Image (cartoon, one colour):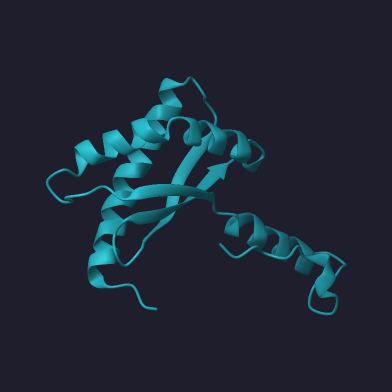
Length: 131
C-alpha cells in the first residue's frame, strides 16, 4: 500500500530530528569514529508506530549500537517528542532496524568484479531478510 502524504511528511520530520538526536547521543557517550545515519523512517497508517532504518559505519559496531539505542529508547522518544511537539499530537513508538543495503550492494560489486559470478551462481550472496 502506498504511503500517504501525511505519512511521508511525518517520516521526514522524524528522520531529520532522529538523526540529530542519535548523533548527539553517540557523541555524548564518547563513541568516536562511528557514524550513524537514519536512511528511512516509515510510519504506519494510523501513525502509532514508526520503523527507523539506521545505517551504521563501520558495520562491525552495528549490533552494539542498536542495543545501546534500545536501552535508551524512552529518552530518545522523549527528546524527539519535545522537538516535534508543535507538529505532532502523539509521538509514534519507534522501532529501530539496521539498514544493510550498503553492505549488500558492496557484496554484489565485489562479486561482480571478482572471479565468482553471482548471476550464474546466486548462492554466493546472502539472502536478504524482509522487515
